[in-house]
Image (tube, rainbow, N blue to C red; front, side, top):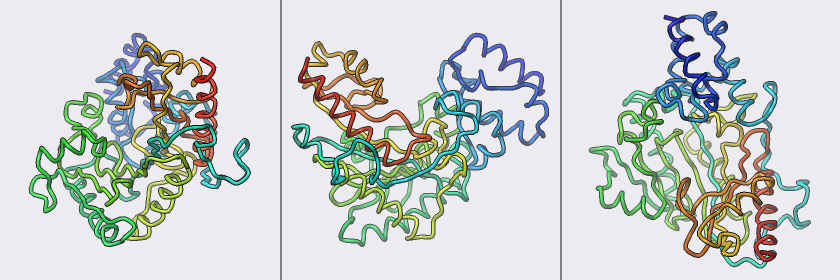
Length: 366
Protein backbone atom coordinates (compact mmCIF):
# COMPACT_ATOMS: atom_id res chain seq x y z
CA UNK A 1 0.00 0.00 0.00
CA UNK A 2 2.85 2.41 0.85
CA UNK A 3 4.38 1.81 -2.59
CA UNK A 4 1.05 2.27 -4.34
CA UNK A 5 0.59 5.66 -2.70
CA UNK A 6 4.16 6.71 -3.47
CA UNK A 7 3.71 5.70 -7.12
CA UNK A 8 0.51 7.72 -7.37
CA UNK A 9 2.22 10.81 -5.94
CA UNK A 10 5.22 10.37 -8.24
CA UNK A 11 3.03 10.13 -11.33
CA UNK A 12 1.06 13.25 -10.41
CA UNK A 13 4.22 15.17 -9.49
CA UNK A 14 5.50 14.83 -13.05
CA UNK A 15 2.27 16.23 -14.47
CA UNK A 16 1.77 18.97 -11.88
CA UNK A 17 5.13 20.61 -11.07
CA UNK A 18 3.45 23.58 -9.34
CA UNK A 19 1.76 21.45 -6.67
CA UNK A 20 4.07 22.00 -3.67
CA UNK A 21 2.88 19.01 -1.67
CA UNK A 22 3.52 16.61 -4.55
CA UNK A 23 6.99 18.06 -5.08
CA UNK A 24 7.84 17.89 -1.35
CA UNK A 25 6.87 14.23 -0.94
CA UNK A 26 9.81 11.93 -0.11
CA UNK A 27 8.97 8.24 -0.77
CA UNK A 28 11.87 6.96 1.32
CA UNK A 29 10.83 8.99 4.35
CA UNK A 30 7.19 8.00 3.84
CA UNK A 31 8.13 4.32 3.85
CA UNK A 32 9.94 4.80 7.16
CA UNK A 33 6.84 6.11 8.94
CA UNK A 34 4.55 4.08 11.17
CA UNK A 35 1.22 3.09 9.61
CA UNK A 36 -0.54 5.70 11.75
CA UNK A 37 1.71 8.53 10.54
CA UNK A 38 1.39 7.39 6.92
CA UNK A 39 -2.39 7.59 7.27
CA UNK A 40 -2.11 11.11 8.72
CA UNK A 41 0.10 12.25 5.84
CA UNK A 42 -2.29 10.79 3.27
CA UNK A 43 -5.14 12.67 4.93
CA UNK A 44 -3.15 15.91 4.84
CA UNK A 45 -2.32 15.44 1.15
CA UNK A 46 -5.75 14.32 -0.02
CA UNK A 47 -6.91 17.73 -1.22
CA UNK A 48 -3.83 18.06 -3.44
CA UNK A 49 -4.19 14.52 -4.75
CA UNK A 50 -7.85 14.97 -5.63
CA UNK A 51 -7.12 18.45 -6.99
CA UNK A 52 -3.57 18.27 -8.33
CA UNK A 53 -3.96 21.67 -9.98
CA UNK A 54 -3.80 23.30 -6.53
CA UNK A 55 -0.68 25.22 -5.57
CA UNK A 56 -0.23 24.18 -1.93
CA UNK A 57 -1.77 20.73 -2.20
CA UNK A 58 -2.11 19.98 1.50
CA UNK A 59 -3.79 20.97 4.76
CA UNK A 60 -2.83 20.08 8.33
CA UNK A 61 -5.51 18.05 10.10
CA UNK A 62 -4.16 18.01 13.67
CA UNK A 63 -2.38 20.84 15.51
CA UNK A 64 0.60 18.50 15.94
CA UNK A 65 0.92 17.63 12.23
CA UNK A 66 3.50 20.36 11.67
CA UNK A 67 5.72 18.71 14.30
CA UNK A 68 4.91 15.02 13.76
CA UNK A 69 5.22 15.30 9.96
CA UNK A 70 7.84 18.03 10.01
CA UNK A 71 10.16 16.73 7.20
CA UNK A 72 7.25 16.99 4.77
CA UNK A 73 5.73 20.24 6.01
CA UNK A 74 9.12 21.96 6.39
CA UNK A 75 9.75 21.47 2.66
CA UNK A 76 6.29 22.72 1.70
CA UNK A 77 6.53 25.72 4.02
CA UNK A 78 10.04 26.59 2.85
CA UNK A 79 9.04 26.59 -0.80
CA UNK A 80 5.82 28.55 -0.37
CA UNK A 81 7.04 31.17 2.10
CA UNK A 82 10.55 31.29 0.63
CA UNK A 83 12.26 30.77 3.96
CA UNK A 84 14.82 28.26 5.20
CA UNK A 85 13.54 24.87 6.34
CA UNK A 86 15.08 25.73 9.71
CA UNK A 87 13.44 29.17 9.92
CA UNK A 88 11.57 30.02 13.12
CA UNK A 89 8.74 32.51 13.33
CA UNK A 90 8.70 35.29 15.93
CA UNK A 91 5.55 37.29 16.69
CA UNK A 92 5.59 40.93 17.73
CA UNK A 93 2.69 43.40 17.68
CA UNK A 94 4.79 46.40 18.74
CA UNK A 95 5.09 49.10 16.06
CA UNK A 96 7.81 50.96 17.95
CA UNK A 97 11.16 50.48 16.25
CA UNK A 98 9.73 49.38 12.88
CA UNK A 99 11.70 51.19 10.19
CA UNK A 100 10.09 53.76 7.93
CA UNK A 101 7.07 54.65 10.07
CA UNK A 102 6.03 58.08 11.38
CA UNK A 103 7.76 59.04 14.60
CA UNK A 104 4.49 59.27 16.49
CA UNK A 105 3.61 55.69 15.52
CA UNK A 106 0.25 56.73 14.03
CA UNK A 107 -0.28 55.10 10.63
CA UNK A 108 -2.73 57.66 9.29
CA UNK A 109 -3.52 57.28 5.60
CA UNK A 110 -4.74 60.89 5.56
CA UNK A 111 -1.04 61.79 5.43
CA UNK A 112 -1.12 60.49 1.85
CA UNK A 113 -4.16 62.63 1.09
CA UNK A 114 -6.54 59.67 1.27
CA UNK A 115 -10.15 59.87 2.46
CA UNK A 116 -11.63 57.31 4.89
CA UNK A 117 -11.24 53.82 3.42
CA UNK A 118 -12.39 50.30 4.24
CA UNK A 119 -9.70 48.84 6.54
CA UNK A 120 -9.62 45.25 7.81
CA UNK A 121 -7.25 43.11 9.86
CA UNK A 122 -8.03 39.45 10.54
CA UNK A 123 -6.30 36.41 11.98
CA UNK A 124 -6.95 32.69 11.81
CA UNK A 125 -6.86 30.79 15.10
CA UNK A 126 -7.45 27.19 16.16
CA UNK A 127 -8.04 25.74 19.60
CA UNK A 128 -5.18 23.57 20.83
CA UNK A 129 -7.33 20.74 22.17
CA UNK A 130 -9.45 20.01 19.09
CA UNK A 131 -8.59 18.50 15.70
CA UNK A 132 -8.22 21.03 12.91
CA UNK A 133 -11.29 21.40 10.66
CA UNK A 134 -10.10 18.78 8.15
CA UNK A 135 -10.29 16.03 10.78
CA UNK A 136 -13.22 17.20 12.89
CA UNK A 137 -16.24 14.99 13.44
CA UNK A 138 -19.70 16.51 13.51
CA UNK A 139 -19.57 16.25 17.31
CA UNK A 140 -16.26 18.17 17.32
CA UNK A 141 -17.79 20.96 15.25
CA UNK A 142 -20.79 21.25 17.54
CA UNK A 143 -18.49 21.20 20.57
CA UNK A 144 -16.46 24.09 19.13
CA UNK A 145 -19.60 26.14 18.51
CA UNK A 146 -20.90 25.42 22.00
CA UNK A 147 -17.62 26.46 23.63
CA UNK A 148 -17.54 29.69 21.67
CA UNK A 149 -21.15 30.45 22.65
CA UNK A 150 -19.94 31.14 26.19
CA UNK A 151 -17.38 33.60 24.82
CA UNK A 152 -19.96 35.33 22.63
CA UNK A 153 -22.39 35.66 25.55
CA UNK A 154 -19.68 37.54 27.45
CA UNK A 155 -18.91 39.76 24.44
CA UNK A 156 -22.59 40.51 23.85
CA UNK A 157 -22.92 41.62 27.47
CA UNK A 158 -20.10 44.17 27.09
CA UNK A 159 -21.02 47.69 25.93
CA UNK A 160 -17.89 47.89 23.76
CA UNK A 161 -18.95 44.80 21.77
CA UNK A 162 -22.63 43.86 22.09
CA UNK A 163 -24.11 42.37 18.94
CA UNK A 164 -25.30 38.82 18.30
CA UNK A 165 -24.26 35.33 17.25
CA UNK A 166 -25.78 33.92 14.04
CA UNK A 167 -25.67 30.12 13.78
CA UNK A 168 -26.07 28.04 10.63
CA UNK A 169 -26.49 24.81 12.63
CA UNK A 170 -29.94 23.22 12.11
CA UNK A 171 -31.96 23.42 15.31
CA UNK A 172 -29.54 25.79 17.08
CA UNK A 173 -31.19 28.31 19.40
CA UNK A 174 -29.63 31.12 17.38
CA UNK A 175 -30.06 29.63 13.92
CA UNK A 176 -30.77 32.15 11.17
CA UNK A 177 -32.82 31.44 8.05
CA UNK A 178 -31.53 31.31 4.49
CA UNK A 179 -32.53 34.89 3.71
CA UNK A 180 -30.71 36.29 6.75
CA UNK A 181 -27.65 34.22 5.87
CA UNK A 182 -27.65 35.55 2.31
CA UNK A 183 -27.87 39.14 3.56
CA UNK A 184 -24.81 38.60 5.77
CA UNK A 185 -22.89 37.00 2.90
CA UNK A 186 -23.81 39.84 0.53
CA UNK A 187 -22.62 42.34 3.16
CA UNK A 188 -19.24 40.53 3.28
CA UNK A 189 -19.81 39.69 6.95
CA UNK A 190 -20.48 35.93 6.79
CA UNK A 191 -18.49 33.38 4.80
CA UNK A 192 -19.92 31.70 1.74
CA UNK A 193 -21.22 28.09 1.68
CA UNK A 194 -18.36 25.61 1.89
CA UNK A 195 -20.10 22.61 0.37
CA UNK A 196 -19.27 22.56 -3.31
CA UNK A 197 -15.72 23.85 -2.81
CA UNK A 198 -13.70 20.96 -4.25
CA UNK A 199 -10.53 21.81 -2.34
CA UNK A 200 -12.21 22.11 1.06
CA UNK A 201 -14.37 19.04 0.44
CA UNK A 202 -11.36 16.87 -0.45
CA UNK A 203 -9.55 18.17 2.64
CA UNK A 204 -12.47 17.26 4.90
CA UNK A 205 -12.84 20.90 5.95
CA UNK A 206 -16.28 21.32 4.36
CA UNK A 207 -17.65 18.11 5.93
CA UNK A 208 -20.94 18.20 7.88
CA UNK A 209 -21.92 21.56 6.40
CA UNK A 210 -23.56 23.63 7.87
CA UNK A 211 -23.27 22.05 11.34
CA UNK A 212 -21.05 23.90 13.78
CA UNK A 213 -20.80 27.00 11.59
CA UNK A 214 -21.74 30.53 12.46
CA UNK A 215 -20.66 34.11 12.88
CA UNK A 216 -20.51 36.56 15.77
CA UNK A 217 -21.07 40.21 14.80
CA UNK A 218 -20.57 43.13 17.19
CA UNK A 219 -23.22 45.83 17.54
CA UNK A 220 -21.23 48.25 15.37
CA UNK A 221 -20.51 45.48 12.81
CA UNK A 222 -16.83 46.33 13.12
CA UNK A 223 -15.74 43.16 14.93
CA UNK A 224 -16.54 39.70 13.56
CA UNK A 225 -15.66 36.10 14.44
CA UNK A 226 -16.32 33.28 11.99
CA UNK A 227 -16.77 29.85 13.53
CA UNK A 228 -16.04 26.65 11.63
CA UNK A 229 -14.64 27.87 8.33
CA UNK A 230 -11.12 26.89 7.14
CA UNK A 231 -9.87 27.42 10.69
CA UNK A 232 -11.82 27.07 13.92
CA UNK A 233 -11.96 30.86 14.16
CA UNK A 234 -11.40 33.79 11.84
CA UNK A 235 -11.28 36.89 14.01
CA UNK A 236 -11.42 40.28 12.32
CA UNK A 237 -11.66 43.96 13.06
CA UNK A 238 -12.80 46.38 10.39
CA UNK A 239 -13.95 49.94 9.98
CA UNK A 240 -14.02 52.83 7.57
CA UNK A 241 -11.34 55.34 8.46
CA UNK A 242 -7.76 56.40 7.87
CA UNK A 243 -5.84 55.28 10.99
CA UNK A 244 -4.68 51.69 10.60
CA UNK A 245 -3.79 51.48 14.28
CA UNK A 246 -7.49 51.56 15.15
CA UNK A 247 -8.31 48.15 13.66
CA UNK A 248 -4.91 46.67 14.58
CA UNK A 249 -5.17 47.64 18.24
CA UNK A 250 -8.79 46.51 18.54
CA UNK A 251 -7.94 43.10 17.12
CA UNK A 252 -4.96 42.65 19.47
CA UNK A 253 -7.02 43.58 22.52
CA UNK A 254 -9.86 41.29 21.44
CA UNK A 255 -7.56 38.29 20.99
CA UNK A 256 -6.28 38.67 24.54
CA UNK A 257 -9.82 39.09 25.79
CA UNK A 258 -11.15 36.00 23.97
CA UNK A 259 -8.43 33.72 25.33
CA UNK A 260 -9.01 35.04 28.83
CA UNK A 261 -12.82 34.88 28.82
CA UNK A 262 -13.24 31.12 28.73
CA UNK A 263 -9.74 29.81 29.32
CA UNK A 264 -9.28 28.99 25.64
CA UNK A 265 -5.80 28.15 24.41
CA UNK A 266 -4.92 28.75 20.79
CA UNK A 267 -2.76 26.19 18.98
CA UNK A 268 0.79 27.49 18.68
CA UNK A 269 4.03 26.13 17.25
CA UNK A 270 7.46 27.06 18.56
CA UNK A 271 8.69 27.07 14.97
CA UNK A 272 5.71 28.29 12.97
CA UNK A 273 3.72 30.55 15.28
CA UNK A 274 -0.08 30.41 14.96
CA UNK A 275 -1.14 26.95 13.76
CA UNK A 276 -3.55 27.11 10.82
CA UNK A 277 -5.13 24.48 8.58
CA UNK A 278 -3.44 25.77 5.45
CA UNK A 279 0.34 26.25 5.59
CA UNK A 280 -0.07 29.50 3.66
CA UNK A 281 -1.42 31.20 6.81
CA UNK A 282 1.12 29.94 9.34
CA UNK A 283 3.04 32.43 11.45
CA UNK A 284 0.90 35.44 12.16
CA UNK A 285 -2.20 33.94 10.56
CA UNK A 286 -2.84 37.57 9.68
CA UNK A 287 -4.21 39.38 6.67
CA UNK A 288 -4.33 43.19 6.82
CA UNK A 289 -6.03 44.90 3.89
CA UNK A 290 -7.27 48.17 2.44
CA UNK A 291 -9.74 49.03 -0.30
CA UNK A 292 -7.67 51.55 -2.21
CA UNK A 293 -9.07 53.63 -5.12
CA UNK A 294 -6.60 53.68 -8.03
CA UNK A 295 -8.66 54.78 -11.06
CA UNK A 296 -5.69 55.79 -13.22
CA UNK A 297 -3.68 52.62 -12.64
CA UNK A 298 -6.77 50.47 -13.27
CA UNK A 299 -7.95 52.33 -16.36
CA UNK A 300 -9.70 49.85 -18.62
CA UNK A 301 -10.87 47.75 -15.68
CA UNK A 302 -7.66 45.76 -15.26
CA UNK A 303 -5.37 45.54 -12.24
CA UNK A 304 -2.31 44.47 -14.26
CA UNK A 305 -0.42 47.71 -13.72
CA UNK A 306 -1.25 47.72 -9.98
CA UNK A 307 0.08 44.18 -9.64
CA UNK A 308 3.33 45.14 -11.37
CA UNK A 309 3.92 47.91 -8.84
CA UNK A 310 2.59 46.01 -5.83
CA UNK A 311 4.57 42.78 -6.27
CA UNK A 312 8.02 44.26 -5.43
CA UNK A 313 6.40 45.90 -2.40
CA UNK A 314 5.31 42.49 -1.11
CA UNK A 315 1.63 43.26 -1.69
CA UNK A 316 -1.15 41.10 -3.11
CA UNK A 317 -3.95 42.65 -5.17
CA UNK A 318 -7.54 41.42 -5.35
CA UNK A 319 -10.91 42.69 -6.44
CA UNK A 320 -13.02 44.20 -3.67
CA UNK A 321 -15.17 41.05 -3.62
CA UNK A 322 -12.18 38.82 -2.87
CA UNK A 323 -9.92 36.63 -4.98
CA UNK A 324 -10.80 36.29 -8.66
CA UNK A 325 -13.25 39.22 -8.55
CA UNK A 326 -12.97 42.31 -10.77
CA UNK A 327 -11.68 45.78 -9.94
CA UNK A 328 -14.37 48.07 -8.49
CA UNK A 329 -16.23 50.32 -10.89
CA UNK A 330 -14.38 53.31 -9.45
CA UNK A 331 -10.99 51.62 -9.75
CA UNK A 332 -10.88 50.36 -6.16
CA UNK A 333 -8.73 47.30 -5.42
CA UNK A 334 -8.04 45.30 -2.28
CA UNK A 335 -4.36 45.37 -1.29
CA UNK A 336 -2.68 43.37 1.47
CA UNK A 337 0.86 42.24 2.36
CA UNK A 338 1.54 38.73 1.06
CA UNK A 339 3.81 37.54 3.87
CA UNK A 340 2.44 35.67 6.89
CA UNK A 341 5.44 33.71 8.20
CA UNK A 342 8.77 35.08 9.46
CA UNK A 343 7.32 38.57 9.55
CA UNK A 344 5.88 40.18 12.67
CA UNK A 345 2.32 41.38 13.01
CA UNK A 346 3.69 44.91 13.26
CA UNK A 347 5.71 44.29 10.10
CA UNK A 348 2.57 43.35 8.19
CA UNK A 349 0.78 46.54 9.19
CA UNK A 350 3.86 48.62 8.36
CA UNK A 351 4.10 46.99 4.91
CA UNK A 352 0.46 47.84 4.24
CA UNK A 353 0.92 51.46 5.29
CA UNK A 354 4.12 52.02 3.33
CA UNK A 355 2.81 50.10 0.31
CA UNK A 356 -0.34 52.22 0.19
CA UNK A 357 1.83 55.33 0.13
CA UNK A 358 3.89 54.01 -2.78
CA UNK A 359 0.79 53.05 -4.77
CA UNK A 360 -0.73 56.48 -4.26
CA UNK A 361 2.49 58.05 -5.53
CA UNK A 362 2.31 55.86 -8.65
CA UNK A 363 -1.38 56.68 -9.10
CA UNK A 364 -0.70 60.41 -9.08
CA UNK A 365 2.19 60.01 -11.50
CA UNK A 366 0.14 57.89 -13.92
